[in-house]
Length: 342
Image (cartoon, rainbow, N blue to C red; front, side, top):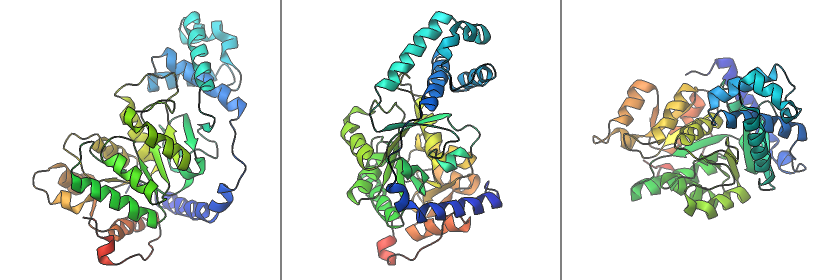
């Protein structure tokens, strides 16, 4: 595993502390957006916008600008200087700044802009060098500090795949896991709905701004999750929706999670992009044993035999996999038949 032993011990201690203080967190006065943080976010996303929302290039420009002006002051006041230092047109800068400011004004009232380093930023994601500078979090923000398992898979699942996703989300909820998925059709939807049906907290990490929904038919589901769970997006409301948003979404989702479970996927499924991110991030990846034994598929054996993923048939096998790296304590649960999924 890529986890350093001391890091794992520290994370386990943190998770235990989080669970002990969960009721206290839930009863706290609702958080509010820090004005200085919003100013910094406006500066940051303006720079991203003038760089065509290219994350790497925009972030590098942001780091360069930070050497000249405090992040907590509006950089629109230094538009001419910023344009000179960064080599961008001042008029373009001012126009983008206005668009970004407007985007913050149209955020739903229960949306929080959380900067990396703040206490509400997801702790596991915080450990990654390429974690987003800001996250938009709508709903129960404390859920991002709980033990999270991602349940992902194909957008065109079989009936059996849907059943397995529902069963997995239900059983993980009994182990007090928060279910994360990507609000996509198919396996994602099945996992979210099963969690909601069983009063299990669920997080949707989306590839659009929180002000938009993709696919559009999931608007009601997204609203339900915002009300009873949590929506997380790294994308500002002014950001366009591109296909490359979704791998970025996958990296965030795997980054906030202890593990990713790929329920059902084809050889070119986007769920495997998340599996790859998870493994690079030092997270666990679980694959159903039934998929490993399916001779029509090559990816399950490749991930288990070559990449370090783990196979499982029963929920307690999955939980033991977590326990083997001392991420979570194993709890005794139901009988063999009640916990068998695959």
